[in-house]
Image (cartoon, rainbow, N blue to C red; front, side, top):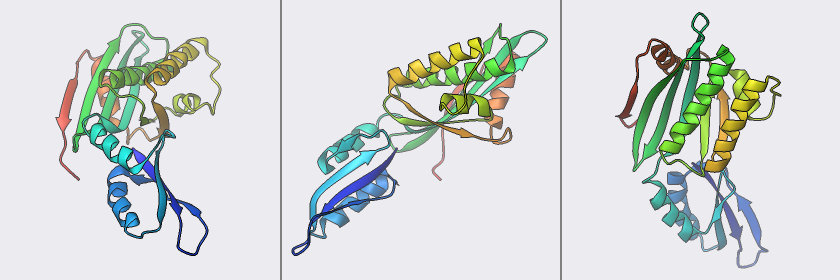
Length: 220
């Protein structure tokens, strides 16, 4: 999660001025705060996250300790595969996240017997991803969703209209669940090559090969 700092500055002979920092990681902010305190020119410090929540310095350090033990810094890759001959679909989802200072990758897929189109499979894959986040206990966080379906992501962000009734039904379910969990979705359209992990999982699901695994990753 990204945070920014609001600093109310007061010098001995100057008026009060408020400064606002650029977005930074929680770790960077934790290192920055003591340096700012040393200036002796701090009247008030406020830390704000991407969800619009604000904390005092004391509250921020307490919150950070709590967050480290929950899944955060979440990036989701999703893809839907469709078999025109059978009318079935495969859903593939990859979730990268951090927990207790350790990075993890969750890989999972799902087979659906009846689906109308490849577009519907993409929506179903995104819905499946959101349901997995709920299982992980993710809530009240910004989450990045990456996929190669521009239409799904643009419609999720409200930039493009969705005219098909069945796709709108999927979109409503996705938005309702995100609102219920307090998740702020950040969409990013990527190429099929960049989405190969989720694509492979969707293809395996169509072949009835179930994949559900969590891997601890090496530190970068």
